[in-house]
Image 1: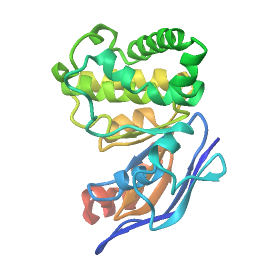
Image 2: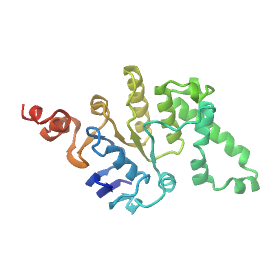
Image 3: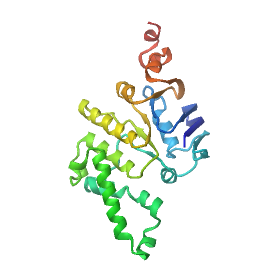
Image 4: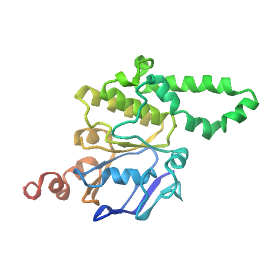
Length: 257
């Protein structure tokens, strides 16, 4: 059930944001994608999730091309993306926000609500979905905040709520866009613990982030980008010591040192 990126390219007017990038994400992996600002990381992740259509190249999920499918269809097939700044409903509770995200799971597993009502199963479905919401909130260490309004959450809690909403779709592959950006040290530790639990439960992870230390401790493999091109791939320590990666982050003088 691997995801394959083959020669993926995205051109905007006057800019090549991603340039002929290829790699795979294998089942049960944690893959990190790094690179300086403007290197194409988020654009790449967005194409993998169907939020942007590639100029050329292919994205294959379980051997089938998905790069021109709608994001909701890709998500329904098991590839779900979070956002750097989660879109939450501030006026709803944490629990209610995650309930809203349950519609994809309901559609995928049980069909349309109308069909359920015909057989009298709607109430039982609602109960089981509520149980699943509680499980996801506990997994994300948000159980104590379930009745709190989303608009009253800290930034770190709001980002964790975004992850909980994505997990409600029961992804096989979770794409995370800058999950640690803007978080304090304790919040990053909490994020690491949650992602370890999510991975241990069987979800494959692919994440973009600026925090090298965070990715070094979490990812088994790292892909480095610069100016839209892949410049290194491999175990974190090896990639972070590549001259091209050092130069991309710190300049040519540091790469020669």
